[in-house]
Image 1 (cartoon, rainbow, N blue to C red):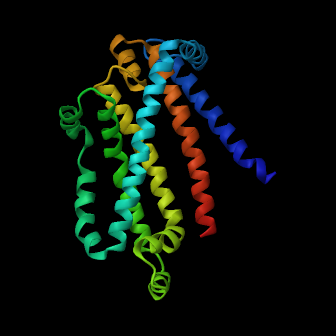
Image 2 (cartoon, one colour):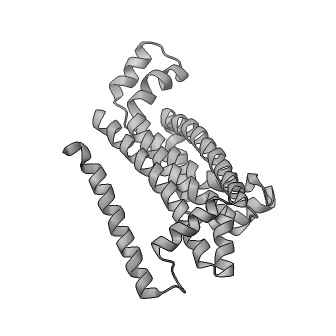
Image 3 (cartoon, rainbow, N blue to C red):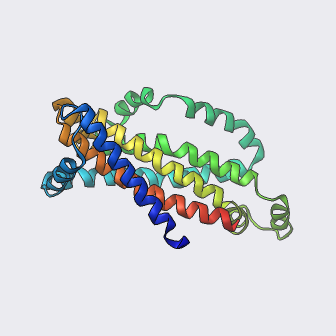
Length: 247
């Protein structure tokens, strides 16, 4: 019975959201919302079009590259700052301050640097996702048990060996939490870039629907994004909980 309880909870949540959606539709009307059934029908038609494949592939490509760069840069910088206490103590407040800056204010600078290209979307996605990964990795290294660090030094491990064999295995639960947060923020950054300065992608489709006041298109694209983000985030959250239970 316990094995099926998460599935039951998920189904109950979906049912509650659909009921809320339908209630809002009855209250607001077709001018503001489309019904769940109408949205599903329109989504099926939208997915079947060739132009949708182009937009979807463009968004997934930009997001995948941005997330991969966020993970690589975030882990590298996080381990460096966590391993080197002096650098970490000096740069961590600066990184936190940069993270507090509204990212949209920096987007014009990225447009001047990269133009209306894939690179701009990737850069904006990385700008959103890399800092949380850095901070979580740094914190994870700082919270590693000192006895493990001393053991590595006694064994005369190099810095790379220390990270590979001691710091990374010990810090993986907290690091994975950073990767989970970075996933969501990188996706947001990539979509925002498409919404404000792009001619392709799901973000562009969403803004196009808003400009044309096409409620069906707005609801369908939003549903696709929410389903994708919620599905992957749920899987990552499950893995995150398993890692923390084992630690």
